[in-house]
Length: 229
Image 1 (cartoon, rainbow, N blue to C red):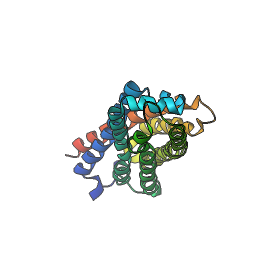
Image 2 (image 1 turned 120 degrees about the vertical axis):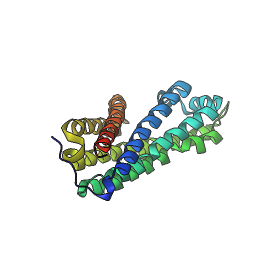
Image 3 (image 1 turned 90 degrees about the horizontal axis):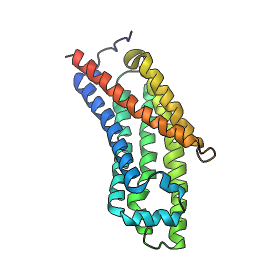
Image 4 (image 1 turned 180 degrees about the vertical axis):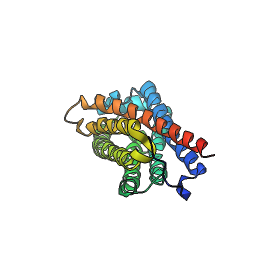
């Protein structure tokens, strides 16, 4: 049985509604963008091809692909307001830390993704030069694999665990806490993908579970909001 948190200005009906809306928007925007990129660009499998080939494919549909990456970056950026809103649902060190970790996760993922709409269009072409391909490969390593993915996965997983710890007894309950921690563990496995390719599949499944967890979290807040009316 869940214990209701104390009534504070941060847990008003309006705040619950806003937080639920952010959680749903975050899950929906990211998944819509990801599905679009899979259809239009064969992303992320396309990254297994030689850099020059990736640039040629990007150039062939640059406007649509760039727009989808902007949408994906916007979805990642939503984790910042989500982290702030969720941290106000209760008290404690875990929730205070989750705010910083969640905002940091949003920043590093946006930085990693923005290379696609802001830099790659200037490198792509029907016949990319060797220097363009080398620059693209370096960007993928630094901004993509290292910053956006490895650090982004670790911070997203850490944020999820902190939220589960901070709200397990007041909002989430045992089931959603367990689902959140499982999702976080699978996402965290993605940090070793450069050394263990199969980790990519675990990470992919983790993000699916995480998206479902965000929506279930939002539904729970909407139910709480309705009951408080």
